[in-house]
Amino acid sequence: MMTAPSNPEGYTAGGQGDAPDSPDRNRQRNLVDDHNHNQGHGDGHGQGNVAGTGLRPRHPSQRRCSRASSRRASAAPVNYHVPDDYANLEASNISPVQNPDEDPITRLDILEQVRSRDRDYLRQQRREEPQEPESSAEDYEREKQAGVVAKRQKVSRLATELYTISYLIFFSLLGTLARLGLEALTSPYPQSPIIFPSLWPNFAGCVVMGFLAEDRMLFRQPDWGQQPSSTQPDSNKDDDDEEAHVDPAAAKKAHMALKKTIPLYIGLATGFCGSFTSFSSFIRDIFLALSNDLAPAVPGTTAGPVSRNGGYSFMALLAVIITTISLSLSGLFVGAHLAIAVATLFTRFDLTLPYTFVSRILDRLVVLLGFGCWLGAVLLSIWPPDRHSSRGQNERWRGTATFALVFAPLGCLTRFYASAHVNGRLPSFPLGTFVVNMLGTAVLGMAWDLNHVPSLGGVVGCQVLQGVADGFCGCLTTVSTWVSELAALRRRHAYVYGGASVGGGLALLVVVMGSLRWTEGFGEMKCIY
Image (tube, rainbow, N blue to C red; front, side, top):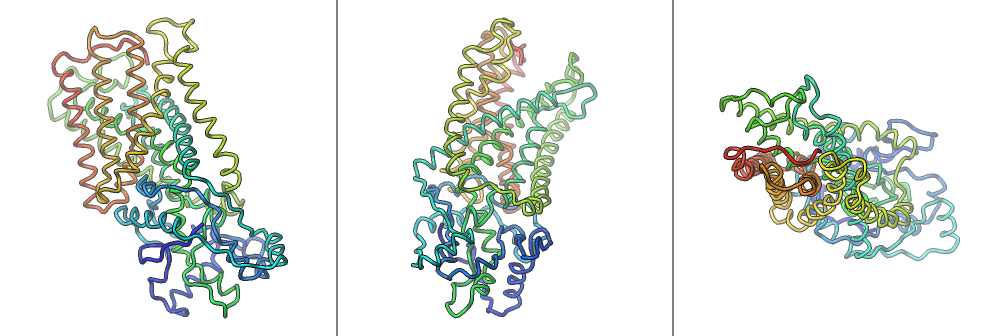
């Protein structure tokens, strides 16, 4: 849509100072002209993509088009009007790993720099509107036959925000169902090596986040974004030379920033991954390990020894922390490796999300799906399917799913706006993510206490509190974003941020849940979940 900002940390390679015939420039030319993504040559016309950029060599029929038409075709069809605050969202546009196929264009990005760079990119998009040069009708018809006419569709800021909210609602419902279902599948079974239920959803959600962070094929250029060039077109050079001057590194950076402007991508990263994982459940399991209240490996038995000394409790606490963080980080890297591995398949079979289908059909359809599914969850909570077959404590739908789905979008939207408006205030410490993680942990602790106070409340009240814990707190807090931020921050800042998050959350639960556990003790819940 717009040309990328020309700054050393931005999207043009002009700041590199390479002469036109320098080795680095020749290296980039070879990348564009000779090196396709799957190391193959396709049908003999070089139809492969440059690794990670989505760039394709031109078809001979396209080379015959005029320079004016080719410049018009390079304009990006993406026209979502997004606020600058969207640059403060997930760190999911930073590659968690280094792609070995992109050694010449790979550079380790850090979160402190990328967010300001992405904000500059969004502002530049709105400031600069590409001027389409005049061309003859004959040139236009040739361009149309070559398939390079960019069909532009302007999406207003209000419509963009409506689509984004709808995607967040819809994917928060899916993420909540995925988390609750995976917890049920991996709940403690006889001789289970892992007895805290939050581990597997956090790992799986981080795998998906790593895939989305590294992937550059689902929203591939030029369908979704502009191909930035390292130099301005020279009228004395032919089209082949102009094509060779496309800078792969600049294209990669522009595409990474571009993803944050797409409502569907925001829904997948912030909505689904953020709701699939739960930081509050992770901290809850740390406290239960400390207090010797984790679920037993064999259902129906007591939770471990009757009593144990502080050393064993400290070891249990460390076990939950180290296992969850290490597996979540591993999941992030595994997802990124998976995106690199399947990129050749995306290129070979031309698998990408078409911009026209997403912008004209899917964006509008998800408005009905998101709000319709949310309304359906409310209706199922009012009239649960098992209200006639099961009574009292045997009623399961409300406590296990429907109340959680009612509260899930509220938590997801709160996290989205907190991240968008607060994360950018302190680049070395994502304050928005930290605040929602601490808030959600405190609310979950209070809901847990109210559910385990002896002789307090009834079945419906217990189910509502369970829905608040699983739905609102589960979607308000996130491990996938937290882990991606840890991987993207400078090492010193990452340790400070990670230590403050875990230490702060555990301190909250020691005060909230510990005040009941070490005085009256936890009572039995009034509902089954």
